[in-house]
Image (cartoon, rainbow, N blue to C red):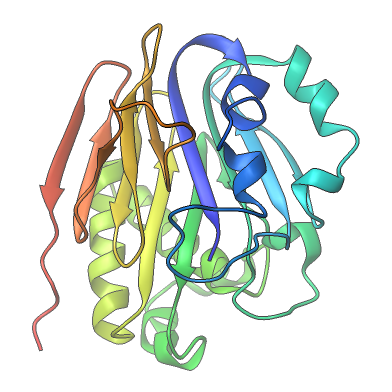
Length: 251
């Protein structure tokens, strides 16, 4: 269910992370090598990136498959960035939200993506929805589990959690409410990346030329890719990657 990638490092053209790698996100849309659930990610895609001296990211999203978009190659060729988050989508269930349901979701300086599925959605998360302010629910950009997960993360960020704690708290709460859910989350503010491995694959890499990549799967066969153990929180900057085990909710 989806593939995603985040990059922090020296300024590069977007295409170098998304289109050019031999097994990059573009190819993962129809031929992922490590995806544990689903086979084709053709239900939309998106790229979010940060410009120098601007903390608010820009986004380009579409409802169709990444390989069918005629504008992305030119955009990815000329736009350069030192921080991005991109994703291709395999929808959990069909819906009418089109590109509004395609990651990355955005709020202020944050970009967010979800690879996975919430079991029993939406009924399983009704107690968590009841605990959110009504305004948060009214702000949902799409009627899908990923958009709701971002609402939970946003609520924790607004309460003062840093990125990693916001993801860890969300994953723990959702896993308790909907056991068996797959909750690989990816979040960035342009200077830090946080991610969770919970039910699907996740890897990190110190990129050639500097910088850090966190991705659902390697975009090439370089031996430097490191697999993240399941039930793990990743915190990454341009120079460091830290892994923290996540605990299963009490039965």
